Image (tube, rainbow, N blue to C red; front, side, top):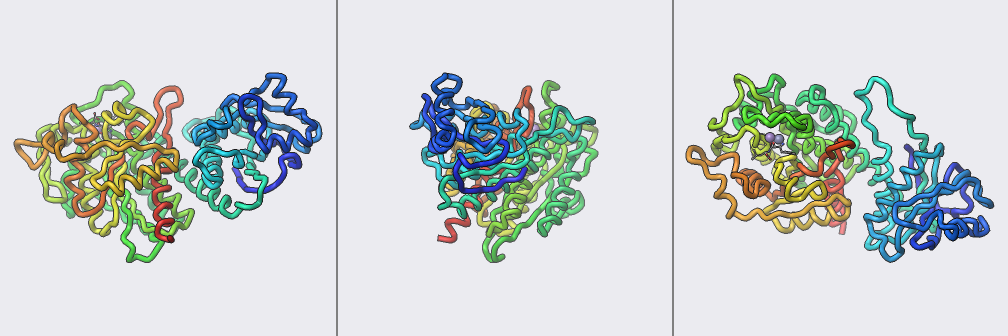
Length: 499
Ligand code: BES
Ligand code: MN
Ligand code: ZN
């Protein structure tokens, strides 16, 4: 799908469809009014007829509206004028694209970015429109032998605005939105791929092909390299698997190398059976998504590379399957991590932290300014925050604030949970420096407490995306989160630096 931005009068647009908003009850937006003027009050009449009242998320397609030059007009309900916030706006754009796809229109001009939205500027509205539109056309059908249903007709989307004043800022916002959408699509594809295809080796190949496309440096460590580095914890998880484990490092240097990088560490368990602490069978297929942290790192790096963002970012991805087997790690096994700390593995299903801890130690070699790890780490996080917000845990208040602000801006919610030392007690082991589980209470926090023991040398935050990285049920699929949050966070860094 192609996007562009144009200033112009809604009433003068040619093409397959013009999209304008309507408030509840029965009030035209400025763009709708301009259209209604050339239409001689036809649209106002439709509202009075009661066929469209402006209810949030409602839509109505009109054909051959008198006086207009376009084939169709699509009216989109925005709800009450005073209540249009970011969520209402996004929902309205989503509804508009859903309706557009049900028509045969190959192009559309949307006049929605001029609508006043609480606490949101034009740039935000533009980039969100692009993201929502791209989300709407996303399909994952590459594993089906025949494509299902008709391909969407819509090819060209124009974001129209009445004023030409902010075109340059809007253009930049559009490019940002498209880059984020691109990154989300990559993250979704990797998440949705079957676990017999998306193996650690496959992830490494993907990283290599991103490196090639954007001229980045990639390093791929194999089992032997990791043995030499003493990554006993990561390798303990890999023992049960026939697929060789990898550690991927992808470097994006968008500014002078003396600027310390942000390191993103993504959990890359390409399938989590639980290992010897085997998971129950129901919905176990969903554990193919246990590499969504890794996918979000690759997606974010793709997005910032596409934008040529002036930041330094290193992505580190520890990746393996977690399988049972004759050689697999057993509950009670004690392993030595790369940091030298020993771990009693009491539950082989708490494997994410075991691969992350060695990757977090490996991150030290980049002398990072900040490290953020992203992981589908705990079922407890799904219980605590559901599928709405990712869990955010950090020992650094400023970093936590920065991430929360980015999450708000990106409409990719996160919520902070405490990381007090009081919880560390739960990780006590009789036989090693620590256990890898802390009991049922506060499972998300004790998992982060475990990671905190490996992150003393830099500013660090942890995102638990177990509830947000994919959707279950009828519309099962990866969401591409938290690519928007991470990308927004990195964009934010360039803005504050410039000031
Ligand atoms: N990958 C899972 C976490 C998970 C569970 C994500 C359900 C999404 C949905 C992780 O490796 C895991 O199994 N965690 C255990 C930890 C426990 C053994 C301490 C969990 O949450 O049950
Ligand atoms: Mn597990
Ligand atoms: Zn897992």
